[in-house]
Structure formats: C-alpha cells, structure tokens
View 1: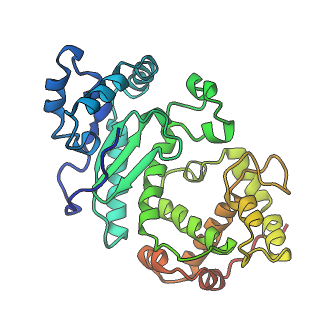
View 2 (view 1 turned 135 degrees about the vertical axis):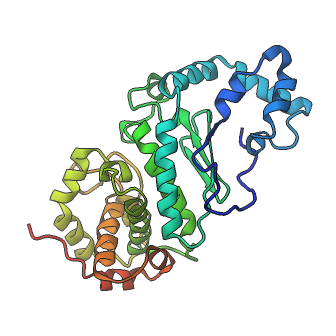
View 3 (view 1 turned 90 degrees about the vertical axis):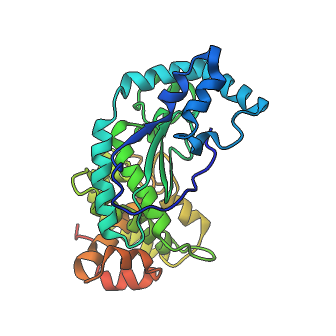
Length: 313
C-alpha cells in the first residue's frame, strides 16, 4: 500500500507543515461503483501510496480487495472511532518538527500522512526527507482486541497507543541523521546509538514523559533507575562494553519481555536506557550541539568525556 518515500526536498518553513493527509479516509470513502474515477481524484495527493501504475488491472484489483476486506473495514471503523480528527497530533508534530529544524542542519519538514498498514508491526512509522508516514492501525491501544487475536505480547502492545505516535516519529527522524557504522557493533556502540536517538527526543519533545520516549511502563522505568548500578556493574565486570558478543547484544539491546540474568520486573532493551543515561550526561558536561552528537561515531570518546558514573546504591 506504500509506493515510495522519495520526494523533492523543501525548505523547513513550508506553510502547510501542520497538515496531516489522511490516506485511509480518502481511500475507504471511495464509491466502489465508481472506484477508478475516485482513485484518479485522490491520486495527486496520495501518489506516495498509489504510485504511477494504480490504474493497471492488477493494481486496481489489489486496492479493491484491500478496501473491501472485512477485517480491514473493521480496522478502519476503529481508526475513525479513535481518531476522528488529528488536530492534536498535527499541532504536536508541528512543534516537534520546529525543534528538529532548529537542532539539525539538514532537516526538512516533511509532509505527514496517515494510513492503515495491515498491521505493519515492524515499521509503524516510515520516514524520509519528504514524508512522515504513520500507520494508525498500529496505535489503537494495548487492549485492542485484534492485537490479542494476532498474539501480540504485552511488551509490544503496551507501546501501541496514541501517546507513542509522537515520540516514535521523532525517533525515526533521529535514526536517519546518525551516520551508519561499517562493520560489527560493540555493545557500547549500540547503546550510545540508541542513547543518541532517545536524547534527540529530549530535544524535540521536552514535555513528553520518558516512559513514552523509550516505550517502557512506569514500573519498568522505575526498575531501571533502582538498578542502574547493578546493570552497569554487570556490564563492566563481565567485560561486555567493548564486546560484540551476540549473547550480550541480545541480552541488553533486543526487544523482549525482560532482560535475562535480571528480574522479570526488568524491561528488555536496558542497554538503550543505559546509553540514554550516558548521552544525557555527556551533553550536560560538554559544549556540543545535537548535530555534533549525532555525527560523532566514537562511542568510547562519548563515554569517557561524559564522566558517567552510576549512582551509589
């Protein structure tokens, strides 16, 4: 359902930066008796989804099948019930985009679109320089019945709420601005990279709660704070920071119900949280810009210059 994320770059002060284009509404509102004509009317605005070949027979059949599918229609009804209007998101994104534009040299305010993805759990947000694309069916609340039918575990479904849309968008922006490292990551490098992403949400979304930025529950976030020294000591004593060991990477960076070797009250991805703590300390103790932070690929230097020390128990 998504043709392309490419487009022309535009100046950050584009006048329509607060407008959200709702592809799901445009598509599911089409008259099935005059479907082709309807597509022609919406195609200029939604070329990013429809591409150039949407009138070819196979493409028409696929689009009709998608719109008339009973499950998709039920999902659309739920999306409209929960998101009858998106003024609140438009306003919040405008503020986040403005702060991003101020912080990043190359940032261009994107056109913003919403759609129904068919439950794209891997990519609920897609971002390129010209477009921010939000799958609203991925933010219907952790108790949404369809998530349960699909067998989505709680540690994932707790992040599928409307409150997570905004930080998820800002994290996608940050990920595109960090230079890609060649070769294998050490645990510290992975931690610092995620720390940079999360720190960017601090800059872009200063009023959003930490639990929403990282996708933890309040209890999980409290566990991290209470066990910060234990986490750090475990990494140091087992010489994991500069290791590329797959088991260590899985333990601290991969999503899951909890961090193995620790309490089941812990969240997974505790390495990302630790990286966030290190980067926050680094930015507090060094006179560098967010752009310079993102450009710096030397994780060891960031750790050493941060002066990070976990709190004493």
